[in-house]
Structures are given as C-alpha cells and as structure tokens.
Image (cartoon, rainbow, N blue to C red; front, side, top):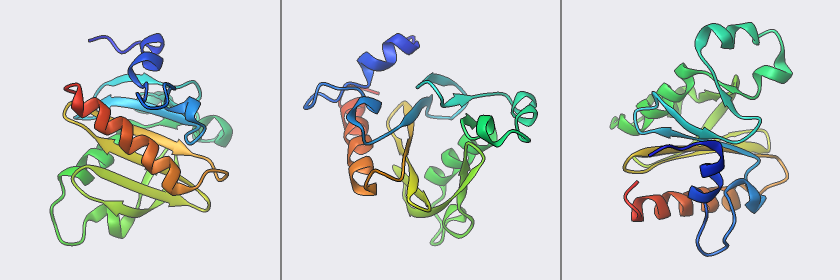
Length: 160
C-alpha cells in the first residue's frame, strides 16, 4: 500500500471523531514508519525524516534540525519495543527524536512515551507500522497519548 501524504489524512482518520491525527489538536506533527523503522510511509509537514548525511547538514541549524528525524533515532525506538530486560536501555538513557532528547516515561512492547519539559513524544507500534507523534507544551500528555493509542488500535483493527 502506498502511504503518500494525501493518503496520510485518510488513513489516520480516527473513526469516532472523523479527523486526522494532527487535526485533533492533541499532536502537532507525526510520522508513520514500517515496523522495522527502515521506511517512512508518510509524515506531516514539518516532521521530516532524512538520511544521515543530509541530517548532519542541519545540525548547526537548530530550527531546521528540530523537525528532522534521523534514521538512528527511529532505530532506537524500534529497539525499545524489542528490549525485554527489566530496566530497558531507553528507560535509563532516554531517546532522541528530531535532535531533541526525551526522558522516557513509559516503555513496553507496544508504546514509548517521552517528555522534554512540557512537550513530548508518543510512539506506538502496530502489526505493520510505528506511529511517532509529537505534542506541544499546550497539550496534556494524556490527551496526546490517548489520541495516538486510539489510532494504533484502529490500525491494528484493520490489519496494520
């Protein structure tokens, strides 16, 4: 299935509110990856996933780098889902999304929640995809988590 940007709005529809993930207001940017984190299926404007060499070009430009998700960052998210140790590496070290370090609030085989100040990230793994969503400091973490988890449930229900 092709997950082009115009398809992003249709496929991220939350059936009970009939709105896209970002349009709920509980998330300001998001991306969807395959379950291995090796392919970006779609991303919202302002949340770009780029190759490492291109990522390095923007490291000295914080405004631009803060919207880029490096491949190593999503691989760390994928690794957190597979980690079955008592204290996961991501719990003791945190993780990075778009060059920002987030402290881990929750990490299990399905979900990864992180926080930096009042903003945060919610990542949810489905059968075939990983949703990564950022919420701004004006949104309550529980509202963002519920929105992303509900979309994860919906995608699992339709086979993704």
